[in-house]
Length: 204
Image: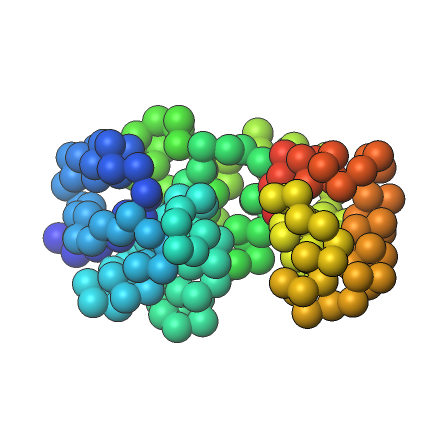
């Protein structure tokens, strides 16, 4: 008899997390041995419960699922990561793969598909929502540099260039240059549109 697959489920919405745990619990070869409501709880939970597969939501308090995936890859490379998201944004898919995720599914995928994905990633396969993969290829790569993303993320709350400069330990002129370049790359008119466009594509 094959051994039970030990799963960690990280999702900040308790109703969604409990529903997913209940669905996976119906599978004879899968057991949800740990749950986390925050991204910064994932590594410790995975280590404590010796999990085989970690199912991570992207948007969680403390740390995003993408950052948690990268942390797992660095600290516990034997754990297979499956990213679940409500938002089928192509940029998220690319970032999930770069973070070491073996699978990327949207949350409204059928339960049987999710269970099958858990088994496949444990077997070393990659599982990607086909519609999302096609969109990601059509969209192309993220044109922003890491520093441009950092400045845009910081600018999302409407901070002035001087405030951004203090927060990011840069000169106001450097901040202005990064914002200007990001606006130009995204073909938008201002920083608010740049933030919105980058978020919609999953680049922030």
